[in-house]
Image (cartoon, rainbow over all chains, first blue to last red):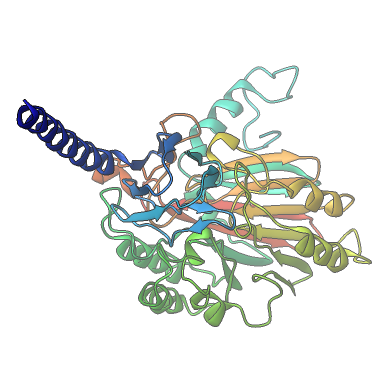
Length: 109
Length: 319
């Protein structure tokens, strides 16, 4: 009985561990902002403290990802990426310093 | 677009004083190349590029080239260096040698030393003095060093300056730094203060030519095609009899006249961009290969002393 319970718990733990690993992997894949047609998508993005967001520029024109005093990418040519790990909660507004009408927000919880 | 006097036929529009035929011609020409002379702030077209070039320009002529984007190799034009070479070849072939050239920015595509070097190698073949202002593509290196080392000598701030030639006062401005989120091009307080000083005490009869990369008039804010604080600059230019503003950035010819100020944007030598709002974004526009050169080009500007006229000819590389 005891051993059966332990076994069940063990399986549950293993499933939970596998599930969290799986979700973690999927989540990392999803933390992406793309730049297409001079637009950040998604323009507003919710992530957790410790998450890393990766921006990829798909335009034929270079762009930057800049949040004043927080992070600043170099100019991203076509298909270049920039990643930033958010270690503190808050709302991070950012823009392209070359085309300032391009804006976005990362909300870190 | 008003009062051009090459054709007097057709009914006259009561509002503009233009004949219908004149208006239509003007619209047709906008895409190919047109010679404008500005008299007391009112532009008159003198003819098509061909006939305009045939008529010997008198007075001072200078050239504008823009948006070379050396290093750009995407489908909209895989050979931006080649089309710059074609533009320079056209300049070399001009029957009357222009006094000098201005380049309204985006010399390079990614601010690489090699791109600036390639541009210099081609542009220098025109054997003309070149006065540059930077575009946002020229300031992409970490230290903004490559542009400044090459073109920043004798300039203020991020690279603005003025000079005189043949009685015309030329002012090169920088509106591609310190851009604010959600905003447009930016001149900034320091540069505006310098501009005010630069114009102070200058005779109002001095023709003024202002050149900068991003348009100094609001063309399409949704795409960032304008300059946040250009109104302040234009305040300082009020009262001058003849002001011509030459810009690049939007890779197409556009013109507006407001009082004594004529605004004009030049074609790129690299790739065309869509007309405002006609595409999802201002991304480089891929056109059929045989159309590309009709959408790239150069501009030449003629100034006649005592005439207060600046004639602008936009010449496509082809067609």
